Length: 111
Length: 116
Image 1 (cartoon, rainbow over the protein chains, first blue to last red):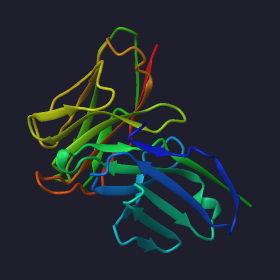
Image 2: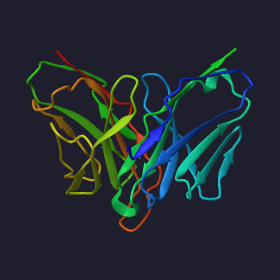
Image 3: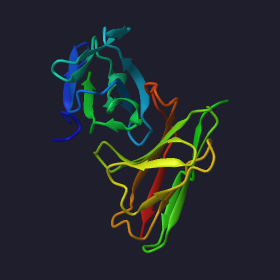
């Protein structure tokens, strides 16, 4: 089993739709969780950190479910500009500093 | 401006040659990472370092080597032992201190290595 897993998609949605991605992690001692956005042939950029209580930034909502060991990203009112690959990242086993990424989920928003 | 710089952006090398990719940060971050990305794939961890003069192997360290002689610098050498070195290489850094949780990682713009 991979340490961090995502459904690669692609997710094809119309503008204005709500779409959700999940990311599962295998190590229950993981402490830090992040969502990144990566555009084609570019470096990943931080979208959101994921906090235990959940957090929201405009149209984006991130949640953590420790019991089931997954994080989620919800995008409301999708825009064409949201088309990208979304990567989750997990800091494994507390203080070791090992930061592992999922393979990414591709989102394509259609007019 | 603070940031993380990778050079060069594009690199071509002949098969069998070692090549070193540069990564420099002026963010005063303790932790630095090297990832490899193949087309349509996620990021795979090659090496990471939490502190100067210390580094650990990631999931795909074979055929690679690193050094961390200075806090600001974490060069990656792709050796001739790496069977399929053509890929997009990404360097990242984050604030980290022993006993503390990682903060988010920031990336350089990446180096596209092509071995012919």
